[in-house]
Length: 497
Image (cartoon, rainbow, N blue to C red; front, side, top):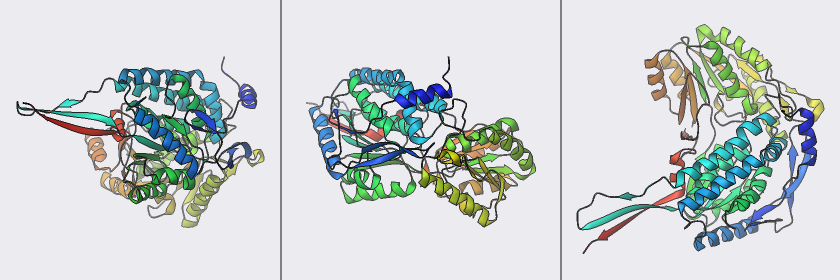
């Protein structure tokens, strides 16, 4: 029997909230004794006081990770051993699905049904997938002359700092730590201060699964303190980051200021979703367009936040999107029927409302929504919002809002659509809808983005790489290609006697 709102509320009243950092196989307070509050976005109430790690804690975690790496307890373990441990880790995440889903929903305000089906299950699948993949890759022998033998082998890069965002805390954690651990690295995970709970909890599950002490450490705290310390540390070999483009730039600078550590970035987006007049199914396009921006409260780097629609079908399409959007009105995130929850905190709420005010001031028209709602709860809720009459020069068409705000622009032909689509500093994702196979291929090739969906939006699985062009970052998450971020290639050339 599926759980009700009351069931989830009762479980939430009993769930244990992890509050300590995890270093060298055990939970510890920050050395300073300092803490910070993590807040329930649905109520505005403090959930817990969590360890606020700083430079000294980062030093302990790096020492622990380096010690474990040098001992080879994980780095030199046979791939089949790492495989078995990672699969066990994934199984433990599945076994604790309800607990982890609750922690995720309480911490970031997303609907509990999404936390269960997408975030927790998706994280478990990701960890198991990389576990299964790691013993199926092969090194290389090069085609040399008969008197030489040349080998190319892959080795773990060393100590990896994984800095993950608050919009999909557990899933983004899995996208980073699964390939890094599978490749044999030691990992220091730094979750966002807005969403530390699931990261802290799975550290213990990883230990139970058999990941050795020191191989996975978790540091809760602020980006400008402990995050900066990791990015500047001379003994961190790689920093993998998902978050804003502004912070991504800083991490690149810290690499240059320190040891030239490898830096992999998945940053912001302002993704276009292009609907041509010959769209094969306008109802499906409308549904996908609504979910592309309103799902997860619009807090997605790949959100289809710019709807580019051929002028002749705009009115019909917007009417359909509006009807779907009305059904996605935010509700208590613990309600299993909720399709939208709360914005992550009051800072992000003010940011989203500020962009809505900016859109109005620039002359765009509110077609739907535009208000903070459910204020009586004390939480941070914004209704699905659509702006019509948007010009590409407007702030709401150029900057990432990270909220449920859709900007609608029109075009007359494919060339104009491509021009508008590419007129952005970002290049993470794009969608396009047409029944013309030539137009589909030509438009997809012309768009400068890491992923282009045709007659769908936000589709994919772990086999497909995810990442961006331009200021949306570098490197790729997911797929076999993600392993390349956490490995070094070594050539060994042997002269035979």
